Image (cartoon, rainbow, N blue to C red; front, side, top):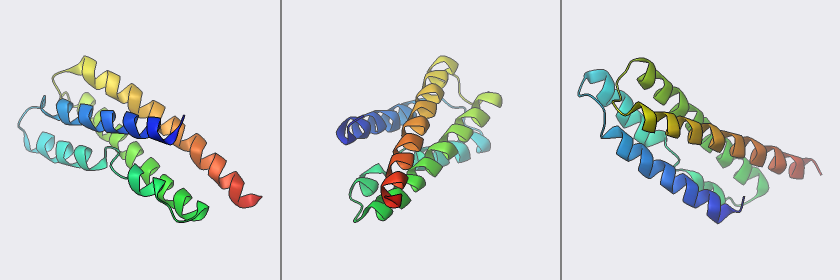
Length: 117
């Protein structure tokens, strides 16, 4: 996947997360998890793309991966606690989040191989 395509996919994921977060109850737990989910939903990729070296790019991609994993766990918690009303949309985003994690893992592996050459 080309960097611009991944960036667009991440932007759409972040937009979808924001839309999903409008469909939560107003409990303290929901409000807390929603705020954290919005913060962790794919906002760091632009910084990774501007990495100054392969090592810098790799470090920033690992941070993006960490944030995506955090988002996935957050959504799974909200699903389990039944905090989000649109479960179908939530399931779509969980699947997309999982696919994005796979893409980042592959990119990190590729970048790591370049450092070893």
